[in-house]
Image 1 (cartoon, rainbow over the protein chains, first blue to last red):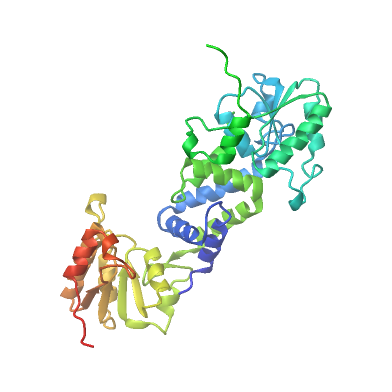
Image 2 (image 1 turned 120 degrees about the vertical axis):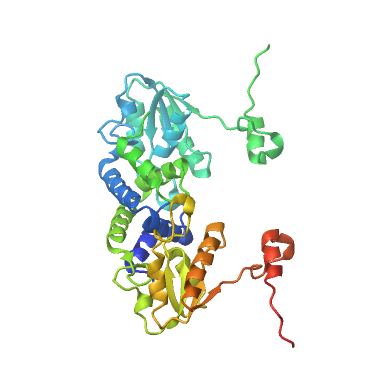
Amino acid sequence: MSNPSHLLSLIDALRVLPGVGPKSAQRMAYHLLERDRDGALRLATSMTAAIEHIRHCDQCNTFTEEPLCELCASTRRDPALLCVVETPADQLRMEQTQSYGGLYYVLLGRLSPLDGIGPRELRLNRLIDRAANGVVTEVILATNFTAEGEATAHYVGELLRARGLRVSRIARGLPVGGELEYVDSGTLAQAFIERRPVSGS
Amino acid sequence: MSNPSHLLSLIDALRVLPGVGPKSAQRMAYHLLERDRDGALRLATSMTAAIEHIRHCDQCNTFTEEPLCELCASTRRDPALLCVVETPADQLRMEQTQSYGGLYYVLLGRLSPLDGIGPRELRLNRLIDRAANGVVTEVILATNFTAEGEATAHYVGELLRARGLRVSRIARGLPVGGELEYVDSGTLAQAFIERRPVSGS
C-alpha cells in the first residue's frame, strides 16, 4: 500500500522539525489527521504568520515584530552592559535566568572557517559599531564553550579590547549542584584553573 | 523579555504534535525561525493541503484522497479476507509487515463506554454490512491487546459469528527473538495458555 501523496508530503515536510526522523514524522502525521485536524490547521496558520511577521531587531538582531525589540526599546535595562550571544535561543536562555539587566547583541552564528563563516559573514563590524557607541562600558561574551564559540569569543574580545572596551567572558566550571565524581575531566580541570579566591569569614 | 506574540502563538501551536511539550516546542520554533524558514513554509503548506485533501475511504475508512482507497480499489487483494484494525496507523503497520493479502476495515476507534463510545458511535453496523457482503469468508480481528481493544474484539467477534462468518484473532505471545527472562508475566502466561501443537519432525 502506498500512502496518499499529500500524506507522504506531510510526513516528509514534518522532518524540518529538529529531532524528528521518519518514524516520528509518520506518527505525527497520523496523529494530526486522526485526532486533531483543527490543531493542525491552527499550527499551519501560526507557522505562516510567524515566518511572515517575525524579523530581526535592527539593533541587536534578536527576533521581534517591530524594528526595535522590546529589550532594546526598554528604558529599564542598563545600556552600559552588552552581552554577546550566538543565537536568539541563547538570548532567551540568558533572559530566563533573570540575572542580567543589560542589553544584548545576537551574532546569529559563530566564526566557522570550515563553513566559510568569517568576520565579514558574521558582520562583526556591526557589533563593533554597536559596542563603541560611547554608552557601553562592558561587553560580556556569552558564546558557547565549543571550539567555534571559544574562537569567536577570543576574536571578538580582541577586536573590542582594541577599542578600549572592558570585555569579560561568562564563567566556566561545575554546574550548580554538580558533583566532582560525575563531571567530565575537561570541565573539572578548567574549574581548577579558574579557581577564585575565597573571602575570609 | 517577552517573546513576540507570533512566536508565542507558534510555540503554543506546535504542542498539537504528539510528544511535544513546552520546551521542545520552543526549541522547534527557534530552530525554524533561525535556520529553516523555507522548510517551515513548506510544512505549513503541506499540512493545510493534507488536511484539505485527505479523507476516509468509503469502504474501509482508511486515509485516501479518492472515494475508494488504493487497497479497496485493487484487484490484487483477496476480497474474502477482512482484517479489522482500530486506526489507519495500525493498518499501515500491518501493511508494512507485507504478510497479509486481504482487505481491511478501520474502526476509527474502539469501544470505550467510559468515553461514551459504544457500538453506535463506532458505527459497527457498517462493519457488519461490509463483512456480510457474501464475499468475505473470514474476518481477522487485529485490534490492540489493551482492555478496550480486547473488549472491542470480543463484541465485534460475537456480532460477526452470529452472521455465520468465520472470525479469528491475531496471536498473542512472545515477540520474535523474545526471551522468557525479559518478557512480562502476563504475556508469558498467555503464551503458555495459547500454546500450539508442534508437528512431528
